[in-house]
Amino acid sequence: MPRLRRGAMISALATFWMAGNIVAAGLAWLVIPRTWAHFSLGTLDFQSWRLFVVLCSVPSLTSALLFKLFMPESPKFLMEAGQEKEAISVFRLMFELNIKGKRKAFPGLMPITQMFNGPLKSRSIALLIVFYCISFGYYGLWMWFPELFARVEEGGSPCANVSLPSPLLNQSCYPVKTAVYMEGFVIAASNLPGNIFTILMMDSTGGKALLSCSLLVSSLSVFLIYAVQTKAQSLVLSCVFSGVSVIAWNALDVVGTELYPTQLRSSALGFFTGVGRVAAIMGNVVFGKLVDTNCSIPVLLVSALLLTGGLVALLLPQTKQTELS
Image 1 (cartoon, rainbow, N blue to C red):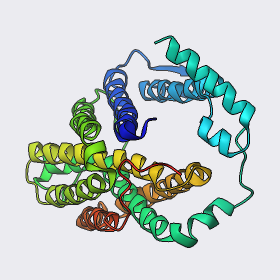
Image 2 (spheres, helix red, strand yellow; image 1 turned 180 degrees about the vertical axis):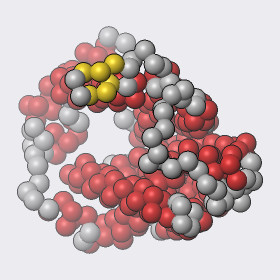
Image 3 (spheres, rainbow, N blue to C red; image 1 turned 180 degrees about the horizontal axis):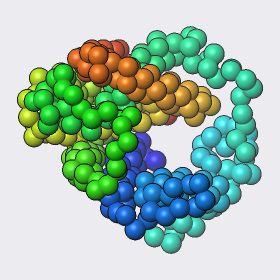
């Protein structure tokens, strides 16, 4: 990608994450409430939610095949890895596509060691904190939005002590209340303004500024969710949180790419993505443990973590339109 448009192009690519969220929410809305997909296979009670899970697995399978068959390796990486013939083949493919309108692995943990040594140490520590904070907050809160909406509807506050139906009771799943799918669809669609904003502003403003500001605004929106009294207020603030936090995710894609040299870039992003997955699991566990006993703790914890991530992001070096090493 050309240096002057790299931020916008990576941000545009990241919008397909939003598109996947919208498709998944719309698909759930379309499939799960239906009763026509309900049948039995021996002891297996095949209901519509199982069909939804099967359909959600299709993009992963097709994407794996498409990457394996059609996605070339970066020629810059191949050249620096000493694979000149492979790089020339990729250049030829790029030339042909433009006319028409084996990576060398590091042994063991060497890339991780290099990331946390020397001049890369401070940026790696800061990026680790940012990834942990946003992943814990975003995925922890996102998964529990339907529960918080239900509590607002019943008690006027997401952390009100209301007596919701016990999931252990033998209750029928049908007819399905479709409001939760509409709300999920609206929240997913609220990412669109944030994605458009990052495409337009990433190259002129820089990923560092957008990352820090979006995390700080996300922190404020989560704090206000704790204080809402109506379902409409909760939905609006949830959309604000979703639309602003996607700016942080897009900025992370750009900043994470620009902070590391070619030989470490993929390993670094893979490592931080793994940190984010661990944080996401921890966020869901914390919400699950405390949502009934003291719901205010995980909500305020998410707000505090996002605030921390926004402040730590200020410590990252400015990488706007820098040449990649």
